[in-house]
Every structure is written in structure tokens, then in C-alpha cells.
Amino acid sequence: MASDFRWRCAVLLLCTYLLCILAADSKDKTKKKKDIRDYNDADMARLLEQWEEDDDIEEGDLPEHKRSPPPIDFSKVDTSKPEDLLKMSKKGRTLMVFATVSENPTEKETEEITGLWQGSLFNANFDIQRFVVGSNRVIFMLRDGSLAWEVKDFLVAQDRCMDVTVEGQVFPGKASKKDNVTSNQQNEVNAKKKSKKKTESKKPDFEGNSASNLKNEL
Figure (cartoon, rainbow, N blue to C red):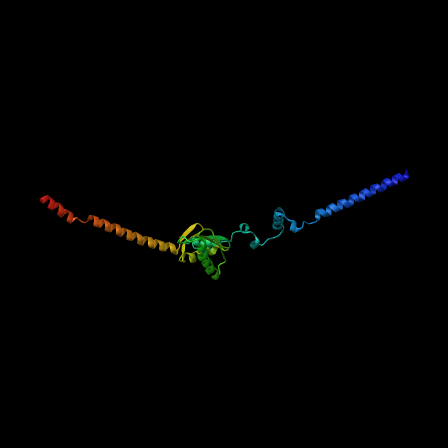
């Protein structure tokens, strides 16, 4: 009887020991970090959220949409020039400038022409990227939007620039002005031709009148 009791106690102690080992092993597994190479998109998103919550992130490292807008010193703003206010409000913000190439170019021609424009801007220390979005349309993207109006001034002075759009405002380019001059000249030529035809149609038909009078006399 005593032997059975000791046996049962030994089995009970062994089971308790095994349960403790299993519990400790399970706890260790939950604490063990997942290999970064096995992370999926959801894991990465959670990690980023934790990082943003737990750490003090510098303003410049935040995504642009989470950054606070730059302070504007209104004492330095000329209220008669709304463009100055726009420049200050776009300081440090990404901004896109749209440009159109004249004379119905192919996409390859647009690539070559606007590539030269980008090269000139790059040499002038403008941090700018270029994306051709059509046969005659291109986007210039600036990291500092306050420089967009300087880029616009350069682009509209180019021979093959039809127009430039900044913040919804369209600025005619050099090619547009040429087209207007050509169109006006053509209109003047057409007007002169029409005037000449009208003058000729109003001239009296002396020969016809003489023949008619002679016929009446006979």
C-alpha cells in the first residue's frame, strides 16, 4: 500500500515537472522574435506604426503629408504679389510643373527636347525629376515647390515650349507667342485677299456696258 502511494506521488511530481517545462518552452517561443526575412506587408506595417509611436522622429524624416506646414512670415510677403505667398507656402513641399512641347512632336522628340531642358536646370542646381506623360506633355517634379516659378520662367523662354502649368495656372511659352504672330500675319494676308476680291468685284464693267449700248443702237 505504501509502495503504491509513493509511486503515485512520483508520477504526480513527474507530471508537474513536465507541465512546468512545457509552459516555460511555450513562453520562450512567444517571446522569440520573428525573423525579419519572414515579415509580410502586415508585419512591416505594424512595425512601422510601433516605430512611429515609440520613437521621437525628426520632422525631416516624416512622410511629407505628416509634416507640419512651414511657418510663413507675413511681414516678408508682398500682398500685391500673390505669387510670393504661393512660393512661401510651397517651401519644402513636392510640386509638379506641367509643360507642353510645340509642333506636334513624337514622344521620342519630346523626350529629347525636355531632356535638354532638364539638363540645363540641373546645371543651375535645381533638384528636378522629369516624366514624359504623352507625345507632347511632360511633368517636372521639384522637391522644393517654392522654386517652381523660377523653373517656369526658364521653360516659357524655350523655343519649343508651348505652355507651362503651375498650380492650375497656365503660362504661354515662347512657341505660343510665335504661333500667335504667325496666325495674325496669316489673318492679315487673308483679310487683304478678301478685300482685293471685293474691290475687283465692284469695278464697273465698261466693256459689257459698251457692248450693250451698241446692241441697243442697232
